[in-house]
Image (tube, rainbow, N blue to C red; front, side, top):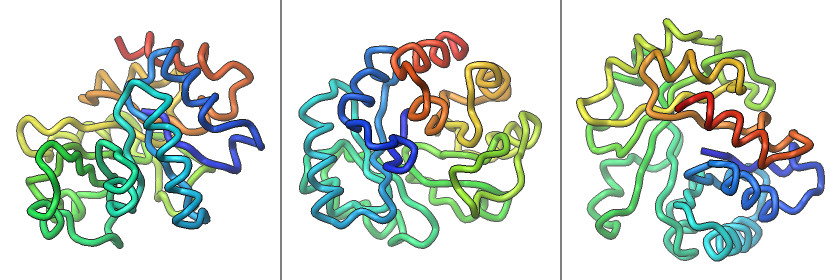
Length: 197
């Protein structure tokens, strides 16, 4: 999963960067734009839905995801409760949730389509991410997910450390800086994908 970030994109076209990442092997794109206006997030989401042959998810904004034709949304603990939203959404609409501690794991709804667990490693991308879990901490949280729920590792993921997180139980990894700041996003995504296979 590649996650957008306008700051890390450094004025490069997010659609072009995400398309390159998909060509390199990214299988999901998540639109995360904390300071973007709803109109800006909608425009970017629609452009990515049109340009990328993989599911597009929208961080926090289920309404925008629905209106833009995205495949789903990723929710945090300050968003509307996942279980309250589920019955109002079309079949197949993906809802993922962030899990960063045993307490959050205990509170995570069983109806989440996937867990995003982290930070796996130190990351400057999210100031409130908490202390790095490392592969052992990730594995401990991943084991708490309901049976059959994919767990994705996030936070400081690179081609050099991704394999350790997959070995610890991750179904995949989410990457921001490792792709968006790369001189060649396609090759960076390819290296990370190869490391997780």
